[in-house]
Image 1 (cartoon, rainbow, N blue to C red):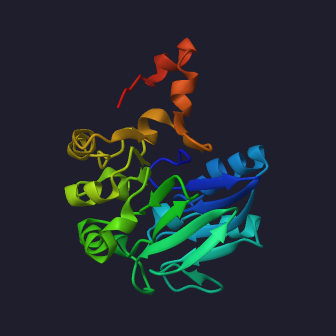
Image 2 (image 1 turned 60 degrees about the vertical axis):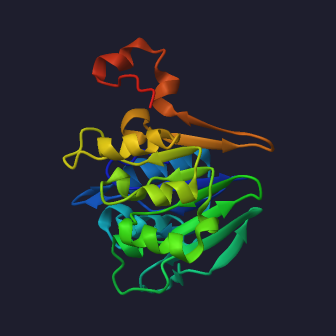
Image 3 (image 1 turned 90 degrees about the horizontal axis):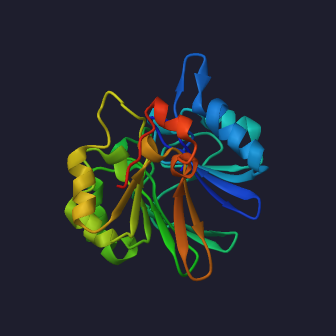
Length: 252
């Protein structure tokens, strides 16, 4: 999970190839694709095979054209109508680098996909799994539980909607039953996300909470019989000077 401030961009990488889920925000004169995503991919020498955009909101879709220009051979999959795109709708499945991708939501393509039309994808290697949720809220979470509760279970959950109060209902958390949940949010953002009530809900459910606001970039590393998650700022904490600039410790 790249540290793109308020927005989302999550990279799945294997054997020097990548799938990018969401492309971060953009603004007049710049974007997170230019500032964070492309430099990281270039530094790691990773080539994208696929770009997936969860929904139409700018903080998830803002860098798409820049990423397409940088990786013209990468496929683009979305939950909304677009030129030269593949649909990201319920029931679709594909295999990439020995990983299985299954789309659980939405049921159909929209002209404009709002939060509850976010593309929800389960990624599995047969032993461990990740649930990508975009910005779904209570309505979509409830529908997913009714539709196929068992399919939601995953070891790692991308927290829906940046930890907003409108998402992460308790029945959804019980259905997913993750070991760890990771949220993408900017530090000291005006929306006060993630909401403290939501963070506490995860903790009360026995789920380890991590977010980019405190940890910076978050990396999950999967091996044959175990997996670990690391935060960039925690790895840097022995360097005393980081503490002078508000990067405090957080054991959440």
